[in-house]
Image (cartoon, rainbow, N blue to C red; front, side, top):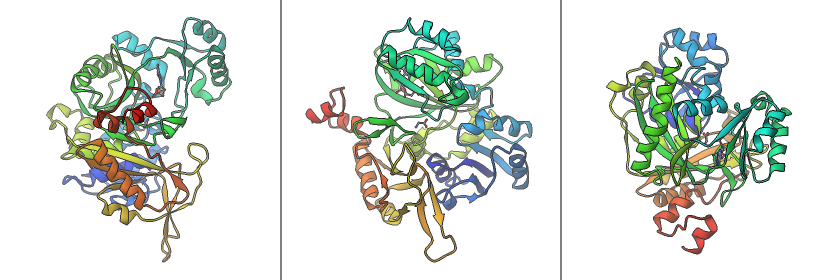
Length: 444
Ligand code: AMP
Ligand code: GLY
């Protein structure tokens, strides 16, 4: 079977790496891909916003499955177009992708289906928001309704901050994404992510992860797309995972089907593990980045039939996904300046030496310059540049292996966090106090 994979990040490199291992794979095509993906796939300059061009490409290359990596083409309805042309596609319809594309939509669905999530109010004007805000205690969470590249959430510890955030959003700080705002109660607990495949009827969990969203060590500084991650999130015990499936994910799939907009693809639930149980923070309608870089190495067996069964509504007949008991951890190497404006063009070397450590280096934002010339070189071409991933019996072992590979890489204009996996490593050392990183060190 020929497969077309859309996207260009570390998530898509991890998917390409895993799909390339499938005995069922004919040829793998990627658009636009990246230099790492090019090791497994033929990369094409195909514009995913040009639906007719994607359909024509699929016909020309006899594509049997399209895998959509990022959220933008989903919210843009590319999966609907492909389905209308009978091309099997892994990824939800535009209507179902509203689970990621509109926070208010998801909150209303939770309210209807009795899914545990923070109390909330949807607001479409500042006046409405000012009135609603007075009903909340502090801290309070202010969210732009639409897609805001992971930046549309403000946790305000004073009402002044909350009002500033509301003013910024209604003044167009996030463009159309902030035309509607959700105000919600602050939840306390530890966060974990749970991933499930669903074809709209059958739903199976395919692993958990925790990521590090802040740019700085000790989980400080501005939010990023994710500076590292590990899987599994052992804090999401089998009992809590079963509750999250029964109380959150399955009712969501059912509610989407009941509404006539069945969800098909991967459902990525951001959970808060509160003292009363898991609560939904948000959904994503796609795999996580960099979470995919730690999920793929743990999936045993063939990914392609699972994605195909999800796409074709035959998940009930597919083999249940099997996950390795090992842990996987990934460290993101980012370009200086990230999450602000990243330095572009910085040279990267040492990837062969890194591979010798047994780690896998996924490309996230790289480019090859001077291709065809003897000094062709790999350079940084994005905020997050590489995701260096290793597996081990424990998160600590995976972490040590990943950092050994990081140390073999020469990327002078890049940086990484040195503490990826700190919570889990402290737990494994039996020294976690449940507080911040400093407390963990004190008791170590
Ligand atoms: P979201 O984009 O909805 O995932 O929010 C981004 C981050 O903001 C989450 O990963 C949480 O760390 C935090 N957050 C969002 N909603 C809440 C909430 N209701 N209570 C506490 N933290 C939250
Ligand atoms: N790492 C967070 C995300 O993919 O949304």
